[in-house]
Length: 239
Image (cartoon, rainbow, N blue to C red; front, side, top):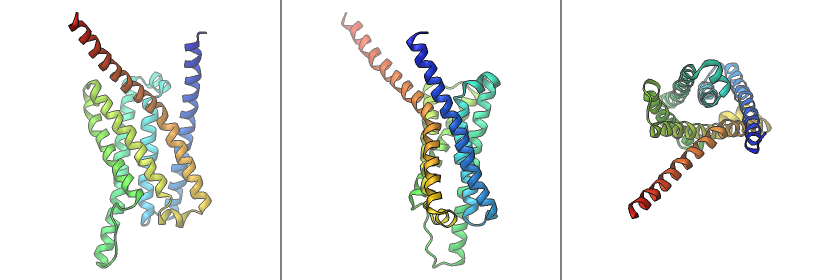
């Protein structure tokens, strides 16, 4: 076995292990928060946390994982894998935005009932990264639609991947800040909050690292081709 084959084998084992950890953590974090919200009967912030966690943590994370799964591609085929990726991405956006809509409506209702109440919109770190992540996720959905129906160019694919990856990272940062909110402090003890943050951080790294590596490699390859191609063209012109 050559050095390249050995490195490829170890790389495959590493990313396969990361994928397994990601599936377990995404499902575990989602199940724990969903259970708590169901116990609270989705009242007040529980409804917001319920839908946002399912959409932005589980569906969004799984959309990234399945798209880069060689096993699922061999099992389902490229076309069905793209369909599954598209469905998960669309569900992430629709369910997650529904969760944001619930929280926004609750704040508007509170202001309507008590005009003197202090209601803050998108002022916290949790809300800031959440709305940034939503905007990036919207960009991913909009750029993904032409890729689904027609074979888009390389630039559009890279744009779609950038929106998806950066949107996922922003939304997971928002999720970690969410454990510091009043809802998080009321529902979980301090050491439980720390555990949620730790597992969410690990899930973020293990879910995003393979796509991040591929994206950086493709950007570096594009830049190399551009500059080397330009130098080669100038050299030919000088002859």
